[in-house]
Image (cartoon, rainbow, N blue to C red):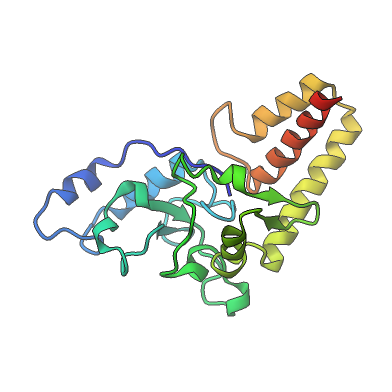
Amino acid sequence: MKNIQKKTEPTSLTQHRCNTNSDYDNYAEKDDLRASLVSEQRGICCYCMRRIRPDSENMKIEHWQSQDIYPQRQLEYNNLLGACRGGEGQKKDKQHCDTKKGNLDLTFNPADPSHNVEGKIRFLADGKVVSNDRQFDKEINEVLNLNEKALVGNRQAVLKAFRKGLIQKQPSDADIRKELRKWNGDNGGELEPFCQVVVYYLRKKIAKMKSK
């Protein structure tokens, strides 16, 4: 999971909210919304960080607080995120992200700056994601299923390949910081899938260098 910086909502959503009896279901311009969400998330799922594209076959529009329980928030842009399909149609143990979450609540929202989800999660060398916050750690596993086998394997593979390449380069401190800026997306453009695994690793490496 990576912090998301929300930007300006689509004009069509603003206008729709002004209509009488407007709700999410009768909002006809969902393509505008998908494009905005994918753009501000820079091409990755709000939860697992897989690649998403702005069409209904490749992503879902996620309500951080569900429409059923929080109908007053169904058209609030700060409550809307872009999620992958999350193993839709597969067995329960293969489902993740919004597909697994359904109407359940999460303690932290990746799009709320005050929550700072990046500061609350750790990525282990085996590809698992954990949190020191006991409730959030439970939600990572039971609500979002972010330690689903395939996701763990993908994160582990990304980190393993990156570390192998980094060792071969014998990087200087400047090189490591340059890699951090790249994987953190400081230069703009799309983020790499599962990028935060590498960002977490590099931040730890830089912290160790500073402590020497």
